[in-house]
Image (cartoon, rainbow, N blue to C red; front, side):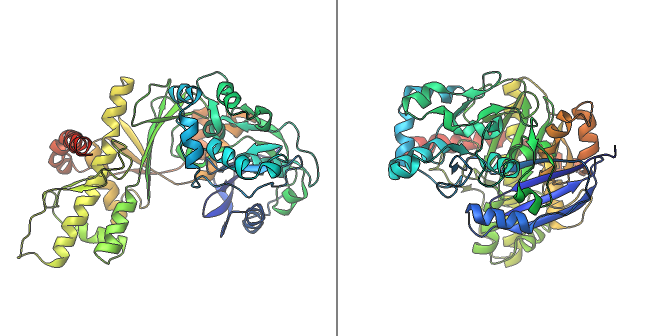
Length: 488
């Protein structure tokens, strides 16, 4: 039999993307459609628009989607409520949940409930619409909804619905158990029956054949369906986070750190996912690129590209010193915001030079903020992290401003830094291809399916220039944090 075609679907916030790969990882076709608003009808429209019409042959398909979004459907998969997105909140319900001993016990096992947690929003739906809630048969993630939408014909009762453990986490799964299970004490305490939630199983588990008319509509009739995962986990796998010790960071509006660990070791600055293949993902996130973009556009009235060009012209060490917290790290203290030091008026400098010093200071501050997770994780897990897999714009060896920023990162981090090709849709396919027997092990799968742009240049003079900053950055932030705690 010919090698199968691999189809990954990313159902995201801004759009739906479908990509078909060969078994050797080459892209065959790719489609994308923007999502204007979040309804089931809009999702289905976007998926039809992003459909790929491929040759009739064996097809392996998996899905990733936003985590923390709730899709409440009836017995035949029709929506009882419109999707409750991950960014929507239910603060009153979250406050009541956090007061429960069962919620505190679950937090000790790796999941702290918040206003945007699915369980908070589910309780809000039940309280606001008790009669409609009676029609809910399944509470699902978008990943699980889509896989079952492909599997079941319209009007057919959805049975044997299962979900993957990465999407189950935020709904209230205990990922410390093997295999993970729903944390019954909490669901009992809020009187929410767990039969509304699918059985939990590993990402990559085979779940059936795409047999619906909708599957035919988007070119996937007869495809083999495998459990998927959250978009964050898919991105981390696609970036090379496959085995214990692997470390990657995805840098865009947010810097998302993922380290593959063998166990959970709680820390205030880390959160955990059960790894889709083995172990756990210790993670963190901070809105870093958003800070640079805001200063470029709002304060200096330049594009982000132009801002980085101005920053690139500034000599190392001439930038204004920016001690950046970026709203969620390294202290997770919302009162702190962003702080800036070492700014001195100088009438002899041009406006562009001042802008460049500001913006290089922010670019360097972001790199230093990202660096803090390297010694933190090394200490937490008694290990050495020698290599970083980076997903960002630009290319290794490129001469554009984003590539310059990535090379600055590599120098500040003082680690070999591999620029990975962004291909989120391949992330959910890695466990699927292993389950389907296409590859003998994860190394063979990664060799076939992942791509890198090469190792980023790291400037020895920059490594030396910022060595003291690497050591002092976290200490100075702790002093700022202590001040804020005493003030507030």
